[in-house]
Length: 379
Image (cartoon, rainbow, N blue to C red):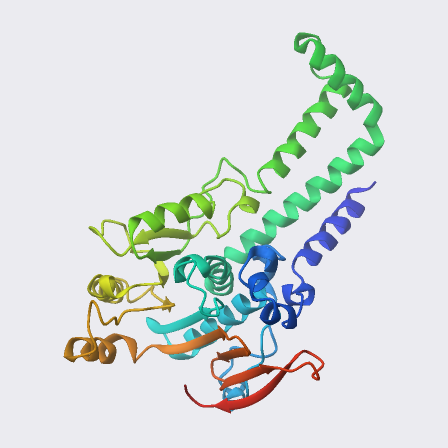
């Protein structure tokens, strides 16, 4: 196989990976009818790099956004699709609103099931949403990921061609080397060069196309605040934060985790995006302090602050009196709702900025299984 042919195969592989994930979704009929499947990882269908695909529903221009105002919101095809839509809506809003904007995203597919906390049940959506918004807004991040994907696709194609052309020789050398490593191929021989090339290609594949000798990321950062350090520590472990192989990490290398509680010692000077994931009423004061600190000290770099499933007013903590009302007026009410999805026993309620809220009811007579019953400006 020629190098041109190998590069063509690698390019085709990368393009396949960058196809929109919604095209392989299961459609929105099963997730609402079988709510358990919508709440589990069965919805996962693609890696974070699929977020490169732009949607025609929303674009960055003001004229296109104006045209969307008053239009009904459609249901997403899958969890990946919901995260992608939410990210693109936030990116469009940030582009129109300017630096240090604030918004919120609400995602609840529990249908009243309180077996898991809101944070636990929305974790999969969260890491997909964070990844999608990172790739849509952080300069240079998508280019880096595409280069990594191209490197791994090229390495796989070259390794396949190498084995096809020299399979028997490589197998013999591996057997002899395995029996006695000191009796391996002579240094400088064609066999040794083949083995060295094979090892090099396998190393590229093992590291996901990333050069382990270079820092994973040196550009702008994205910070996710969890309610407490326990949840932040679990996310560092479960989300593969800092894994040298990008294919094993659920979020890009630009992401860092912090908690709303405790002393805030982290360096926020390079933070471009800030997420508050399921902040509770008990953390309301800390959340405000952290938000104002970001906006005051990092106003020239901060693009957007996103509150995901915030529950900052609670009868047992803030109450619904003057303190709760002031908190709502000061922090919660000004948040622009970017995306809303809530599943119900009989349907779903959804909204994507700047479109309207829509209510959908299950209907077996409809081709997609749902019928639009109401469209409104606000809840």
